[in-house]
Image (spheres, rainbow, N blue to C red):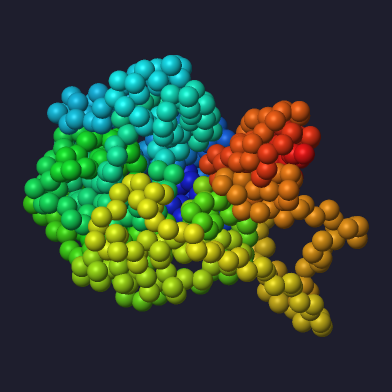
Length: 593
């Protein structure tokens, strides 16, 4: 086993890996950006090193910076978590070239399965059929139109090197093909560093069911069980559960074997997930995620295994300590992804900000995997996953009721979260009867009355007297983070009052943004952004005529693109932003007369 492991990630997955490393007596090494200097994963790690930068590209996607930390820390292995470099073959090769173990599959398997096009070909080689589609990279919207005319509309454009719903666009008609392809390519490039996309048939009412696989270096490959991930919005998962409800065991066994066949076809080693779409008793290969999944805890609850520990042991060369026949699945587990999003009226708008209160639920078979705590800030530059709440029950109904109790017990203030949407899903008759699909949340679930209140932080109180108190202070020496204790006067920090700049001058207050479908408006003709983010593209120019609801600009926040729409018809009198500008919630970006 390894003595020291570097975790090349952030947030809840970094915390998750660090905890297992601590249980195994392995020294953990964290890395952090300037924005994550005091993040939870940094506070929990045995050692922490600065990568510099703010955005993912400047920090967690900076290969040279991470390699430098590996050399300085003496780490023997790297766990990539999920996202960032977890499915990057070049990064895996760079790690291996340093004589350091990459805790994941071989680079060759990442290349085959990381490219969704080649993964379709590999699955076919293993005898597993995929969703009908083109196994070539798209070069123009005309190719999307040709495919749609042949197979019918709508069709799905997907990032060849992506996952998690990013870089995916559903195209309902030919006139939207070119714009959808450009948007998918842009989002894929920002999220995964590659812009290639492909097209496939879009199933009408599918369920998303995936298989957890494990493979060691001795040639043993097993499937642990399936997870139903059909509760989604924007093709991103909200709730996952295991086992899949209303799922025939004969199909389960066949899907499990198909997952093993796909894994062997690409020479897979370590933990991975083979994803399928299931509809009308048939299943189709979708893709393989060559990493640990966000939803892996539901499998851990059902099979009673620590998947991160198994990843470490496989990477160290140990054989799997069990065979397929040894695997026992007990009870039912459900996971809810608590994201910094406001689900009001079904819009799920990103909600970055500082968490002023975080009260976790407790109780039997109740687990919270969080990357944040009280006082931590959820940045617009990173993924919006705040925490995962996982429960286990003797059966699905038992688990469902336990999850409702745990969600109602959870308190998060300072940001909006998806908790109200989770409760709406879990209590809906369709979910209870397992009649939902990947399109159900957006097409059927009524979230018109859902609200996600954000309670403001309380103003700091004045401190009197000279009593000394102990403070934990972080300092950096040669880029390595250290924590020291100081005894200082108990004085509250000096902050600018609300609405007043540090020098005492009034601070301009942007007009409040009204909620809008992917955008907002500060008032009639005052087009404002509903959240902090970066302008990706301005779609109109001064003097253009626009209709109410027409997109004015594309705003990127938390790795997602959102349209900012006109609140009324008229003529564009003013454009106040350009591509690349950073804006805050409520900032007016255009004026319509």
